Length: 252
Length: 300
Image (cartoon, rainbow over all chains, first blue to last red; front, side, top):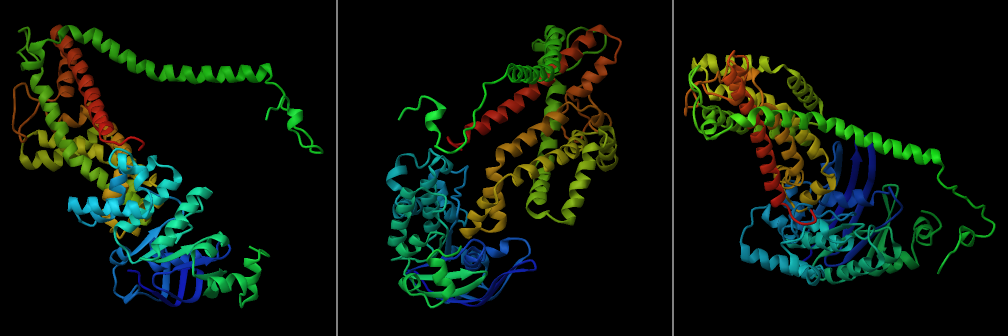
């Protein structure tokens, strides 16, 4: 089951440049939350702070408090432990090129020392079904490399890979920006089903997409969270003038 | 839709760009440059084939079962072979690989994954300098490190000398190959909760493995023919030796000894030894290549 996320006074830096300014947000469990805003506004930085990917960049640092369910992210939790509970799907599909489809999905478990073959088979099957890829790949799970799939299939493979470690939260950083409309449609459908079991935070440049998949939407501008509310409210009756300008296409 | 000419494609009001047919000069330059490129390939491959052909011509006559299975005979007696040197070379190279490959790959991993700083720059510089140190000097170092302590020449000392020569090549190629692995692949593993060292070994290194192996094979092939560092480490031996702490024969040493001798029979055997050495190197490199190819997936 998904858990909620609470972010309090989050500031993020790249060296001396501050990328996020005092962000506060409460993400509901088992819902999809979309983050929108122009390029460079800090959306990606923000979700990378939720699973501590931000700090893998040299000289990057964070202060503030993030809680995933009861787990305090920046207080005594190891990054690897945390990331097993907070899965991530990246902007560009990034399957492990030298691994078979099966090994790609099983990677998270295998590399963390899980080796029960029968259970692995079951989890790989279930994950690929949840990501709506099973029927397309079931005949060559072991023979084909993850890199031999099409872009859209690769992205669904990456989603299956993230689901296989059974996270509670799924972070998606513009998961459809490299995909064609049909693959995008499939992934949006998937998000719709997945949010019954997972808390989803999705960064998107596509406002229609935010409107289609998310119950809540946050609008970022220049590193600040300008407005966070029900998606419907953000798109029909935003309280901030800047949000209105952005969603009506007057800038950005 | 069919378009018969560029004019039909043009949007009214937009000036048309007409690309003229290729002039004879451009066509000539194109052909000439292709020819030059082909010629350089031939020039590069020519010495290799010339050496190989000449070795076969001079050496094949002396290769027989005795050459491959017997130890050298004393001067004046015909026959005999280099079996002990062939095995000795393999033993020395095995020792060198066991020491040099893990150290080289380890250093390469450090340089690429942890060495993007001042300390890494120092290691990189030192490694490049080591690459340029004359091989005889490395032989002296191994003499001081191993032979002086053991009080006699040995296969181990020869292996250490060759290992030292392998390390910088392997380290630098491993570093370059790991740097080619996109950061996104590492992030994918981190995102799954995989620790950094696990990611490096099971993801990054595995993704770059074919390039890393190329580096290892380059280093291997380079030291396989080295003679100078073995002169006062492995030393050479006219008889069988199965102990790694005793003087050991090596093909390159045997070729050297026989080539500078005044005897025709030994000269012929030196040619045969050189041919066997080059066949062994080509064989080892090809075997590893095939094994690696066999282990990779379709579409990878």
